Length: 316
Length: 257
Image (cartoon, rainbow over all chains, first blue to last red; front, side, top):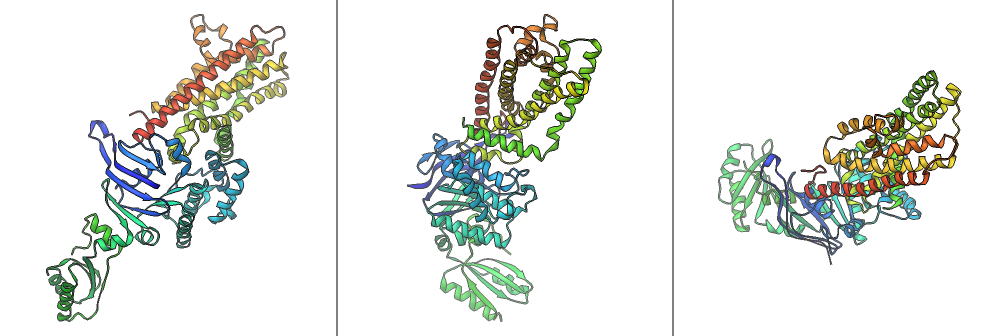
């Protein structure tokens, strides 16, 4: 059984003052196998959070079907709710006047965790997320990173089978971020499915089995992180040093060079869409201009992301 | 509706109130009202007025905090960003609202005790109920119906977008028609039928009668009327909160589009 099956999903919101409806998601198809980690990447307003909210049963689809662990989110929302853990990022979403421990105890009751189990499970969560020493302080005194860890603890308290993490590392310090990544790996090892929305490409590359790129309400691509790399394997980059701008400009005009951008004083990055033989020619051309310091590399996930979304951020 | 959820929300409401002193303002102002009313009735030499002087500020306090919790209820969850997580949880939202209103109703009950103490300590007027069981039952059903009505209003306030205007405009008519300061029977004849559709008028008459010696007419029936008001409000509250939740999942907004 798949953890998430989305077919032909469309979600509209009413336009303001008689304006036409705003389409937040359109024709979305998505399958997330159980026990895997899917990264949902996209710019602000792309539709990531709307999709997460539909999966979490707090928004209805306008059309299409959405099934979570085999249950329809529209028809069987009550069956879906106990199976999912929703972690929304940011400073909001917690009861800031009460302690971390009391926040967790409250949510334990809302998820109908038996009283006997609630307290030990809350203590285990406080320990797991490094909040035990400050468990009795009001949450309003917490740093943003600590609040984020409490969000995670809250979302995992009832041991959900599908965990949805919306920008979970925003505001976390590097140590907490590393710990978070460890938590995601643990969740996967426990057989849980994780859906992670993020802007952090390194995070997606490190954690996700698959990534989906979403923009303007449409899934542009879904595949393994490695497959995303292969998708654009025709695109390589060449980093080189040239003290004269003229060399970079003339290089940008050569066939097969998509764009050249300045990385720093006298250093450049070229994006090339050519096969191996042509790339050798381009490197030869640079060498002929006296460029000795150069290296080639495969594009990072971030560059692929920009490519797929057709954002020409690297063009000179 | 799970009692565990109501209890958890009640506990949360009490814990939050402890760190928000403004929620206890009524505990400070109610004794002053008691003193004012007691001064007036003692000056007028009215014996039944003494009951009203104690009962009035107490019932006003109870209704005031319940209405305040209702106006704040769902809206607060919305602006502090907890509403989405609550909607994703299996527990019904109605249970949460009830728990929060009960937490504030406890504060409201304190004002009843305060009023009694002001009369006893400040004025030497010690009111002893002639029918203590009836008094206890009357207060219990009044709290139940106050909580149910406030829960209904919590949903209605969100739907109308005008929570605070409604909150303010609902207070004084209910104090008048609820007979909390003077019995509805002393109001002009044309106004009295309106009083009878306000549960507080039945509650306040019952509490008042509990302090008067002699048989109380139709006590059980009158208690049942207050309970009936409460049950009807609770059923309506569940429907209205469902409409609010329906609006959120359908339109992304709690208010009616």
